[in-house]
Length: 261
Image 1: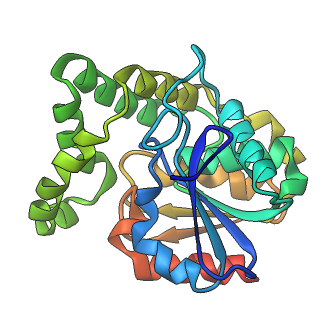
Image 2: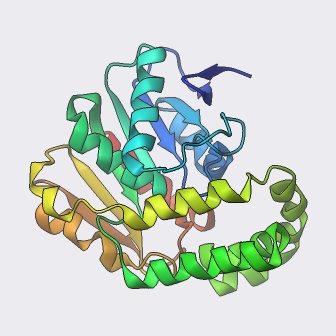
């Protein structure tokens, strides 16, 4: 498997197309983008990667993990692969990694899509993260994986896809990262706060949110549109936190429309 800068990566799409980097959320696995890959790779040279500390990347993490360090990982990967500038889309944790890059190395980004992201800690998603960590600490990885769809998907979608979710649980458990890695990564996400620096960002940004996201409420992206010049926000009416999975056709259309502008 190809690795660079300690990260597993994989290319999809035409060799001569413009580069689009996809960054997943807390789980850190590039497999999160499977429902969107074909549509995006038809137009872009898509770079998938697993976050450090998860999946197929280097599992060793520093004692204190920061979103700024996660952004450094992306920049190091771009350097290793000879990518000077790229489009970037991140979901939740991946989205705030994109915001961190836009602050520290804006010359590396053409456009940025932040899916169900945030710019500062919010009491609601902090409470959700705390509940998930409590499950992990006291009930173990199996309970954590079992509960995960509740935070990611609308209730109706879970009911209609219950057998699929059941079948995926053993795979998630087989690739479950060290629990201490999840603890450190969650601490980094809860500490991320760039609210006072949004005026310094000039990268074209789409904040794509879902109205029924029960993990990271849509209002968490309001400051992106309100305080970053030229940023825009689009609200999907349904889809939950993982709206790219539950409504991929609508999601893909909105993303491609923005990235190609």
